[in-house]
Image 1 (spheres, one colour):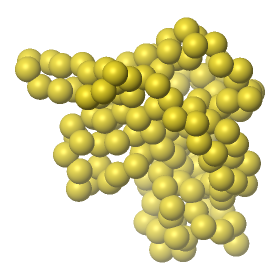
Image 2 (cartoon, rainbow, N blue to C red):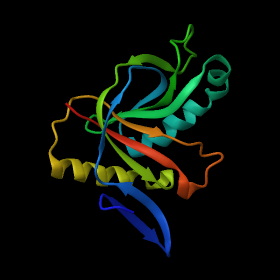
Image 3 (cartoon, rainbow, N blue to C red):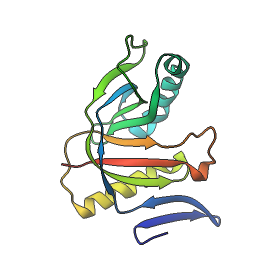
Image 4 (tube, one colour):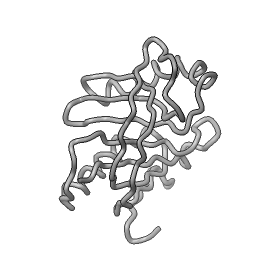
Length: 166
């Protein structure tokens, strides 16, 4: 662990590891299929993913998926659960929405640990951003789920938390 990371332990085991110095990245414009919910993000995020997963077999049959990503606006209570796909779909399945997400400049923090630790990790990221006071742009925050939770142990799941920078 280097100078710019923090860890949380519980009962002697690592629960979450979070970088505390963001890497500046450019997220590319991306085709995005998603379920959108408004209101409490902590309440609606699991519900959005559950709804989204009910469409997943059809998406995987018809599209090449390049990543599972949530987009959200924490101050507005807007949450989207979905996937980036390689092309605009010819037909958007009922219950899903599509947009060409424009991407842009982001500060990327990396969390390693279970998805259940994301609320605490995001809170820490928001604290770090508030302390550093970078110029933010009015856009979506992202969570990019880097590896597959079906084949990756919980304590090794990697999530990139991305903050929109001006």
